[in-house]
Image 1: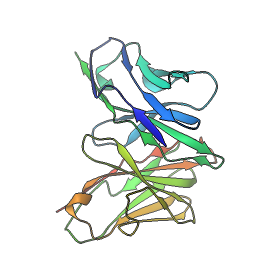
Image 2: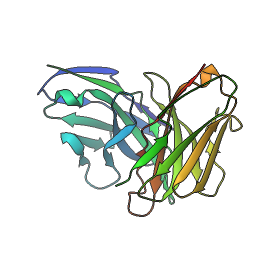
Image 3: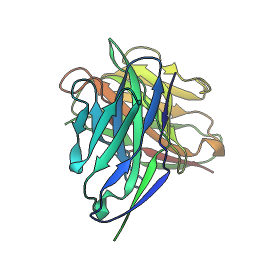
Image 4: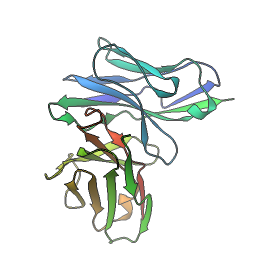
Length: 116
Length: 118
């Protein structure tokens, strides 16, 4: 079984300030890690993913995340946020089998609020 | 690339009726499709996984007779909510993964379907 914990349900940040959204996971097997963003009344858009290799991954819209196996974390960061980054951010994990993707286990989400 | 569509985007129905939601992969072949449910201000919960040509695998607690899933082709999966009741009102989101031209470990999400049962 897997679980994902997003410690902050809501993060207010001033525009152009840096932000970090925290994500910790628990799994008895190796996993893939993802961050998705959801704008109001829309589906999910993939921000970035960690499958293997370099632990620092860069995604779209200036976001990056670092996989830390010892701390079982995958925190999302952006050095300077914009008003348009206001959205719900979900961290997710999936185990993998030889056939490809398995179902995702999501965290409860973090609502990023950008203040002018 | 890797576009997934859903239809309808919004549906309102009377209690006791059935509603069908379509999920299509537009530019890749989706060997696996997933259905999720999201309640207001909550996270997504996996309902079922379907592989083309096979029966869907449902998560614990999801009624397979109530939520019928069909994955008849590599580009189409449908979710039918049978005898819908107000407690079935939710946001239903599908995702798809494939093996050709897309990252097979990644799920690509549709825009979601908001179901309201009166």
